Each structure stands twice: as C-alpha cells, then as structure tokens.
Length: 264
Image (cartoon, rainbow, N blue to C red; front, side):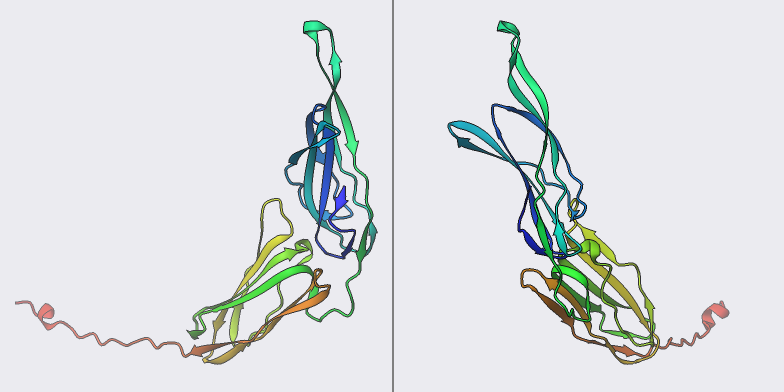
C-alpha cells in the first residue's frame, strides 16, 4: 500500500495505490478488495489496472488498484491494511491424463505506511469554513430588473475538488428586508463512487415588496489550497438589482352593445 505522498495537510485529498506483483503462471484469479477506510475518509477503489513485465525471464502481472482519501485531524496516521484473496496455481495433482492444476486460495495483506498529517496554518481567514482543495465560486442573479412582486433568483454555485464530506454549505448572503426570501435546500452533486469532486448550488428566490435600487451583498468563500500551501479567498462583488413599481391593472369601460340589446 503506497500513498501518493507521505506528508499531507489535514483535509488534503491524496492518492492511495495498492499494487500486487505476481508471476503470470501462478495467478488463476483474485477476489475483491477488503479495506476499512478509517481513520481516513476514502473513496471506492478503482477497477484493477493490469500490466505485464518480465523479470529474470519470467512474465509477471503488475496489478494496481487506486483510491483517494484524506485525514481530518493532524498527527501520524496509518491506513488500515488492504486484504485480498488470490487463487494461485501451485503445481499439479494426479498423473497422466488425470493431471490438473492444484489451485490454492491465499489471503494477502498489505503493510500500513505512516502518513504525517500537518495542521492547517493559523490564523485562518474569517470566511474559512474548513474547505481544503481547489474550488471555484460563481454567482448569478436573474433578472437584474423586476417589478414589485416578481421573483428574482440569486444562484451561488461552488465546484471543485477537495474534502467535500466536511463542507456543510455555502456562504451566508445578505439582502434587504424589503425582500421576501424563499430559500430551498442546496443541491449537492458528485459522480458515482467519487466523494471529492463535486458541486454545491443554492437558488435563493427574492420577492421584492418595494420599488428601488438594491444591493445584494458581496460574498466571500475561503479555502486552503494544499498545492499552494496557503489560504485562498474568492470574493463575489455586490450585485445591484432594480425594482420598479408593480404594474397597475388597466381599467376597461365596457359599453353595452345596442344592437344586441335591441334586436330587429
């Protein structure tokens, strides 16, 4: 079992590789991987990647399985060992026409490498909520001009790669009390089998109650970038929306149809 790096930051997603080297003539087949991710938070293992090599004139299989994981707290951690059952061809049994391969099931278990987990530097920005990785924050307001009573949708979307299981939500937003606020639950999406590549979006519906020009407050989101070794802050500037008075209901004067009232 081999980590992509032996020193990481708390919350930093890093690769783990489990590799198996066995003579081609011996390997019949193999079972699935057994692995308890704790004390790490880890994804599912990938399908095996099989390559062949030659050593001392003998063909060998090099089989690799990959996953990603991170540690939440600083210190030295040891991943749990990976366990797997192999069916190995160990000679033959019987004689003559009745000879057949002798297949024996063997349990293998990996080592437990040390991984040093560094604490995040202090002080952290006020807008830091624990996100570690690389992220983007986008904001969209539609429409930017509306009448009283007409809904305005303010969408925030956070996307990127990082410790998504520890990211609880999007930054808070500030709006005038002249808006009625409808805030549905945020939508989180990740690819199947992946924990660390995702998107979190939230649509806040604002219904203006008074005309005027309003500012939707600036939004800040801070995260720790392990590649840079420093905190990064994304700032969405304040947006302006214009609210006009509600349209008045037109009045229609309905005149009686004299021809209908006085038929010939």
